[in-house]
Length: 221
Image 1 (cartoon, rainbow, N blue to C red):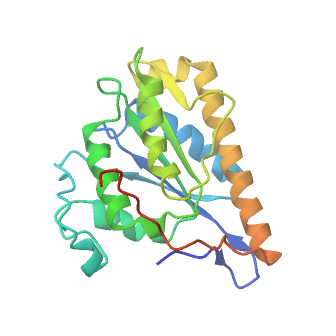
Image 2: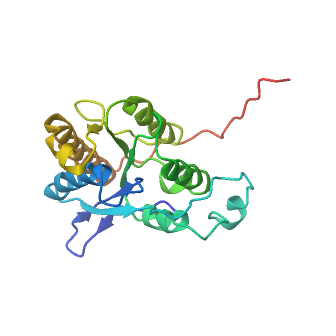
C-alpha cells in the first residue's frame, strides 16, 4: 500500500505532504502553525493538504485485530480510514495538536492509535513531523508523545531549529510568537529538503533498507 513519489508526463517528481489538524478548533492556533509550515512547503514546490479530523467522536483502538484481516480499521464511521487513503498517496506528514493536560488532544491520540495500528505500512519510511500549540506549558511532553508514533515505525523524524511548538491563546497571539513562526518555516524547509533527498536517492537507485524478520521478546517466562 505504500505510495510511490508521483511523476508527471515531463518526468518531474511530484511530492505531497499531508498536514493533519488534530485540534477541535478548525482554524485555531494549531491551524495557524500548520499554515506557516504549508506556505514554506509550497514555496519549495511541495504539494500539500491540511486535513481536519473534526469534532465528531473518534473511537479509541479496541485491539480487535480485525484490521489485519480487512486491511483497514473495522470502524468505518469516522475519519480514520479516510485519512489512511490520503496517507497512502502522501510522501510526508505533519501532525499538529494543541496541548491538553501536557499531552496531545484526545481526538488526535485516538486517531493516531488507530491509524498506526491498522495502517502502519502507509507511513513506514516516510518523513514525519509533530507540531504542538500551547498557551503556556506542557508542550515538550505532548511533542514527545506524538514523535513516538514515528520512532516505532521506521519513519525519519523531521526537526527544526528548536522543538516544533508555538505559543499563544489565540491565532493572533500565535502570529506574535515570532520565534515559533520561524521554527515552523524552518520545519517546512527541512521537510522539503528531506523529501527531495529521498527522491534523489531513489533516482540514483538507492533502495529502502532490508528488514530482518520481526522478533518479539516477552520478558515474563
